[in-house]
Length: 134
Image: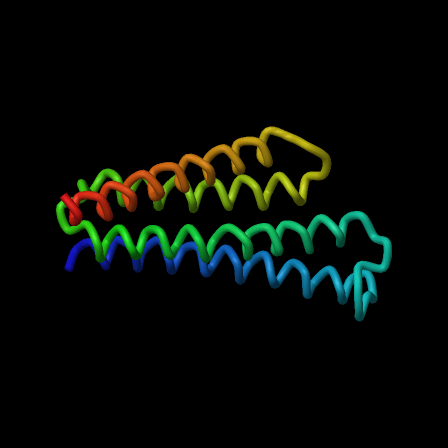
């Protein structure tokens, strides 16, 4: 059962990241008095995109971690943690980078770490699927 608890750890952390980013969007709407759309406000557009980008990446990442935990009981714990840490750190760095403005180290590192997580999970899931067939 340890593997599902690892998945729960990263699911909880990433859900909190989504919550913080959603709060920043709501706060931006209030601060800039924007009820619909982005009002042409660049800072608010960045807040919206940071949340939207996380909402695009996090569900797939969490699905991968949960599937790894369920399908591959022999998967090394480092694989689950490496995937979870890469996804979580990647989403934090990317969110911070989006709020900072133009293309920067936070956005680049966040994207790279998220892609590393997807590579680890994708490879692990393909292995799990093929191992059952052989």
